[in-house]
Image (cartoon, rainbow, N blue to C red; front, side, top):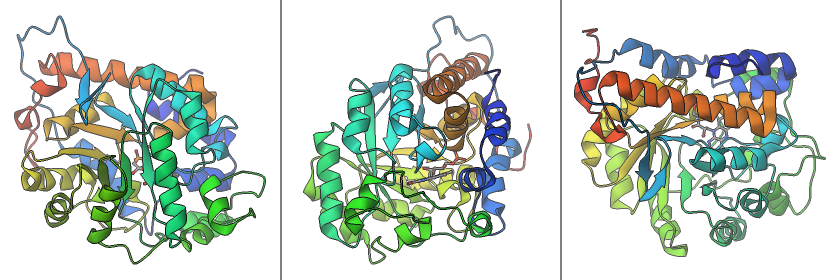
Length: 357
Ligand SMILES: Cc1cc2nc3c(=O)[nH]c(=O)nc-3n(C[C@H](O)[C@H](O)[C@H](O)COP(=O)(O)O)c2cc1C
């Protein structure tokens, strides 16, 4: 496993995966403009370091939702991880726990919430929720999250219907019948080969802000609203009881043509005005990306595809290596920016848009 950064893992994973699986993990919606822009946005801005600051005790350690994490980088919810590696979500959970950060488990996981909790009992985990039309299924999922010791429900709100992912249409990517997707099996009362479109047909398209309030009432867990990219929706999220917000465009997989999340972040930060924590995902590939996102106001960033590439290449060990590389990169970025802690980062550490100095 000769990987020295997140990009190295993708090169190696691509060689191992078949076309359908690679396209599913790598792809985006429509012309993939937003997919590309998420990454390019980080290259459009520049960092502004301060020198002669004592960074001898630099640490990436911070907190999210009041709990300590080893770095401001969390593992994003990504579905069907056993398609990448037979050890799937339990392996990712163990690696995240060892790295001292949060793993967010997808509703469309190929392992149950309990199995993942048992794999890494000491780890911090959040549960990503898709609401099924059958409310019984949704409530059972939340109950399992509570029983499994998950510390937050992450409600994904940018996917009332599935984005148009043409790579999957071309390859006919489907989840084989032998691969268990516990939430789906429960919703259809059995198991069969299924495409992502088949699964999304079972989700509730009538969800509104009122459901955020209902969700906040059915358990004591904070509801993190994932998939907000406007100031208007950030305010709505807070008004309806969100415990935190993830600025996300689903990794460019839903509405193609929306802004890069880094570009959307500052508006959301301004609207939220410190009332709840704001996280961001999409296009994070380097420790310097994490530093930039935190400087612009994110409490932490989340990382999606690179975790899948690392899992594909090396299973649990691969994800552990990726997270360790990312943590080293974050600490290096902090030290070179003159910031002993993530909290020391601020907007003055990043150039304004369209100005490279
Ligand atoms: C293959 C794949 C599957 C995903 N599955 C889910 C999911 O089940 N639930 C969800 O909320 N987000 C899902 N996402 C979105 C991620 O949580 C995250 O927003 C995105 O991957 C971040 O962008 P990045 O991959 O550039 O880091 C998925 C993303 C990918 C690439």
